[in-house]
Amino acid sequence: DQSVALVRSAVDEEPNAVRAWLCLARVELDRGPVDQAREAFQRALTSYRLRNRRGLNAYERELVTAPRWQFRELQEALR
Image (cartoon, rainbow, N blue to C red; front, side, top):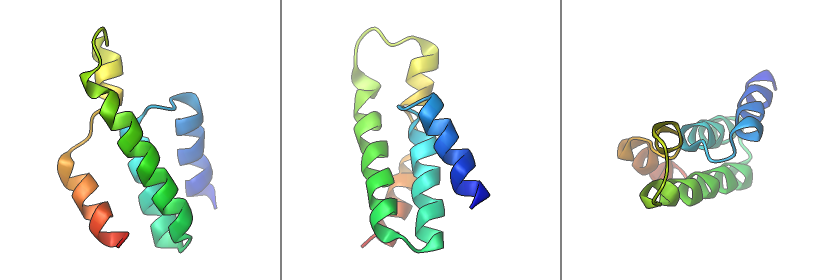
């Protein structure tokens, strides 16, 4: 599927891009592979935890942030 390939190329390029991982989780969930959606969601959480790390520049901080509603929405959908 082209959408999965595009989002995967984004996370390959920027492995800590929280919003890209959340997008991948949503796409995978919509396609049906719940395990892959859960894995992408976990990667988003792991990257999100980096947001408090000292020494991040503005670009890096932007990569590791996302609106909390996106996490909540996906978490509920993955139950």
